[in-house]
Image (tube, rainbow, N blue to C red; front, side):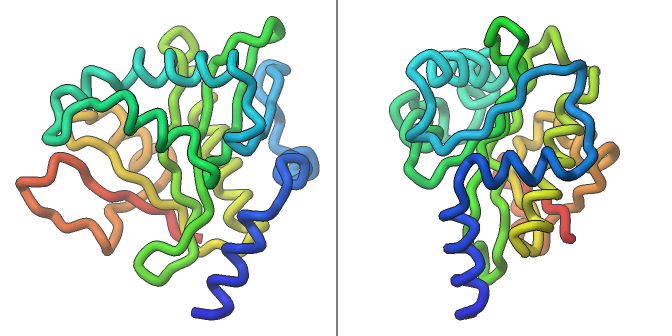
Length: 192
């Protein structure tokens, strides 16, 4: 457990440029020559924060409102921009946010993980491989930081996202998923 904590702490302290360099040296081509940026939440400009919230709400607000817990803007904003939060942004040439991943390095049920809190792609850019490309970068970050798996939650009613993660990205239902019919989400993971 001591080794796991040490590895997670090391991953948490990697700079944004350290993570960006993992991508640069991976030979995983950046789609359509879009701009790729990596930030700690504290490094995000107000404009990027605004675009992140707008894209999140465009894709997810209705699902949250239909969930058992509902949608609480303040809670979500605190989660999105926590000191532990990291971001991978895909931007157009004029700095329009096309897609993003919000992730953290953490210990989850004793395992060192990259926890993927959000993966959002603008509806106009879905189906072009951006989401899959982002997941590949998350796998790369896991590999480079010695995390054991990527973990995420997805609403059960979000069949499109479940299919994406399970069929296109080879995620499986995680051992920590409760399979409780009263819970409106499932826990998925990709083990490296």
